[in-house]
Image 1 (tube, rainbow over the protein chains, first blue to last red):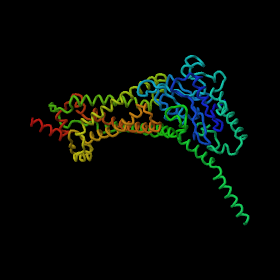
Image 2: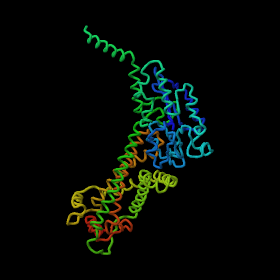
Image 3: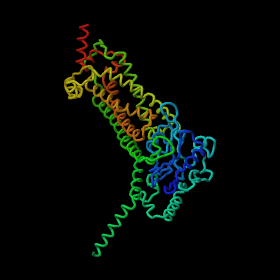
Image 4: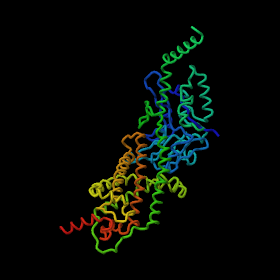
Length: 203
Length: 310
């Protein structure tokens, strides 16, 4: 079985924010919620780096570990999903998540949190695949249609890769080898792509 | 130069060249390290901490909450219950030494009783809903199933968030009402030495509040302040609190709340089945003179003097 992973190549990301826009549009995400964001380090300085980040679908997902109602589940593809019917909007997943993935629409006064929303790897939720209920709560289920996440599919520089972790890692490895200027991989945390040590250390 | 000297020189030059001609190399690795520990960049997506790529304190919070806080908290509560049960089995109720006189004296005013029971009910609601959020997944969820437990947890969360601020009001009113009675005095040392007359032969003297009550009062106030401030930070999260503050607040909140819960179990035991004649003080407002003389002799004397004066 494939183990789905995201990979963002900081040498290629040009901070166009098209992944952010595509995600919002594809899933008709409400105002104030952003499942994906692009962060630029040393913005405006020589050597600035951009990274597109969303839920990384961690192997040992901290959100799932702290959820008081146990609303998270991991699919056979390694995608971390949650059940909005169970979520009580406590915010613990937000405290625990290293990537700032959980989003909360404001639901009333004093910042009362609504049901959590996050990237689904375009895999919907527990409802029937691409049913109106699933679409309304989680957005489109592209995985059920045999497609990969739209953010990566339409990335113009192919900085953002999504899919079977082994294939994604192989693509990146070949890219690094071919790329001019040695030590490309060695610059990063023990050669792993950005975020992989945090998200997939044990798999 | 000799061969080895040449080699060393070449190595040193190469090292210097790497260090000084490629400053990006060093800065780059350093930058990634800083990002790993929460350094922020710029993001067009505006939001709380949206520029932060990785926050690593979340993992610390997860390990604390799911580890020592949950485990030690559970042990603390279980051991408290066992200690109280053990004490009851060994010593039984603390009975009245003499028969009741049938004459009662006023101990708690109507205002004090309303304040006590309102705050007590709020506390129990907060304690039960809080324990449900910490332990429900391991205990009740397997019994109720995900759907029913989620409904219960949602209700618990709402109840917790709304009764919290009201509890703080109760706590502050208690501070005002009972601060004067709870200042430690020399008598308290004697009371503590004999553990309230449990170990000593003679009955320990006490004013309106004995040292045990004073201890509970100050635990309630100190842990109460911690639980209140951290609770407000968690409850009203619409002021842009960073996640690190929410994590610290949650740790302080759960630790102090568990302490208060253990304290409350002791307080409930002593005030109800543990001591004969104690509960009626807080329900009817009056206590038998036998009880007053036995448990709060100095207060009873004072009361008598005041009665004679008026």
